[in-house]
Image (tube, rainbow, N blue to C red; front, side, top):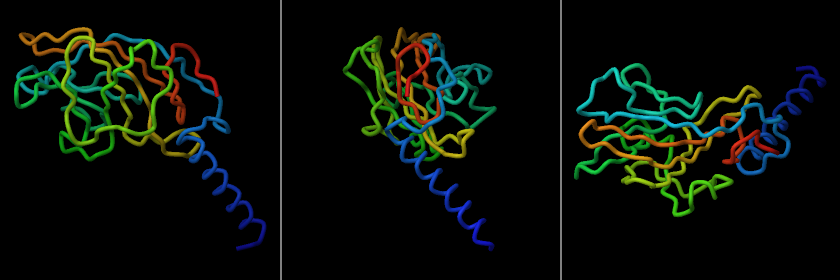
Length: 189
């Protein structure tokens, strides 16, 4: 390989490494945020006991509810656990690999400004009730600038309907790769 190609390859690899390091905590060096953070209200229906045509899961990439019969690209699903309690299930808890994580928060929804990088549960459901706040880390997502990182979100349960087997919650997803900001508006570096 000619020397100038080796240097270019090394520089690209180092740039990618810098972006990956930045994406794990610090947003300096990342491309400017493109997606505006907004709070959305969403309903999901239980994995079991509801029509398959209803969305039972949610994906942070694209910030949308999804049907589990149409995709495995999801970050958490809603169902009732073995004791009949409503719960969110990360991908590891429904045998889709331990890629996404959840953690219950005692901090008020509006007070959460930045997602933590650790403390997520990957293989067990998180029991819910009204006003429960949960932090979400997505499965690894390929960013347009060539780095694979997780996206982050916060959600607050607004209500559970045991008869309809549904969950209603508000969620704020930061869809900007490498950013952990969980405030409405365009995230800052």
